[in-house]
View 1 (cartoon, rainbow, N blue to C red):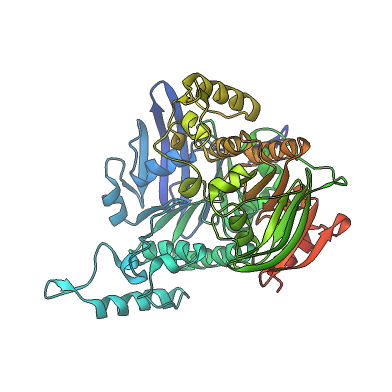
View 2: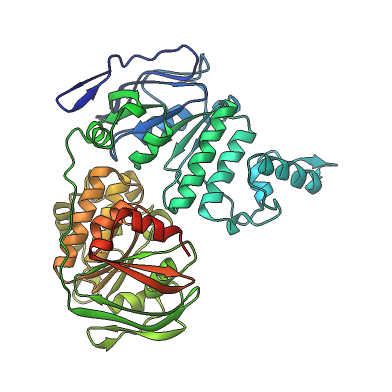
Length: 506
């Protein structure tokens, strides 16, 4: 590998098959006239964690789906432990130990943990499910991986981190030799991220290999032994992850230096006041937010920050207190009432709560705020005009407004969701992980969009698990403990270390 003019160029992009659990050799894929993968090759060694990097739309998901057998490729070969599996379907590849766990891997919430773990092959006796054997086998698997929970519990009661662990344990229990992890730490708290990363690393000691996809470059540098970078469907760099600095990794992913956004802090006139606000999981809370100010909320899971956000957004009931916006008390309680009062909530779960996958990009952008003609007819021209304006202002990369929203990259989906909220001209914007699952370039664009909104007088409450992101964006940090505000950081007190420490302290 050599470095030239700020770009890291591999000495050879040809796969080395020796001791490889997976060899991808010269794979091509087209969608119509568009080449989405162009001669991609990579090798994953046994017991290794291989980082797969690239901006949104670079081809990572397409390659993962081809490796797993969800998509057919147009050329090249896929070898698993030396066997060409290119023609085999998903089920056959799973039987050979290849598992893909997407960011939204399905856990059946209403089934037990044990059922989720052992499906589709539940133990049987006399033609019926042997529940005693199921619970015994599941408990043994869970305990062997340091997750001693009752297998009879409802899977939906698990936290996000434990759900991810359950999906991985299920794959390992099925004798997976290679697991593809797509954004496994998205939406997790810092402590949960660290715990999951340490556990994944421990699985390599058992011989399990991983392809690791993440927009958290620090995770890749910490966890992965090797990496491959895709850009516009081509391999542009590969090598040892430990040899890359954070800046160099950002460069090889984007192909250029990424100008980091830094916000200037000002003095703000009061615009919004929370007075004695109580809600499930927190309160009473008293907080004043300035016009155009960004206030970061920090606290352990269940300590109050997210509960406050959801209460203000109309997703949790407000039990006592008042919200004053520009001197008038807001009527809250339902999401529609929050929106009508000038409060817009950006959920951390854009797939489950924010977007409608069966709708087009244009429909998602206009959802709940349809432009009208003649006072009551939905205006198609108005919808298209809004889409054109948002596309230009927010740099949304897409084929057309009629494209299904699910075909867009995570960063562009997030811009559509943010654009829908900003179209309502809110007074208070609630941002719960606004850059979760987006690449470094999209993150900078979203940061600038948020800052542009504050320059127009929009106030912001921000939740972000990345201390560096919060430090760069916020004017003030409010720290929660046991549902109440414990203290506040301002000015020079807002450091990455102080935010990280506050996130874990009670």
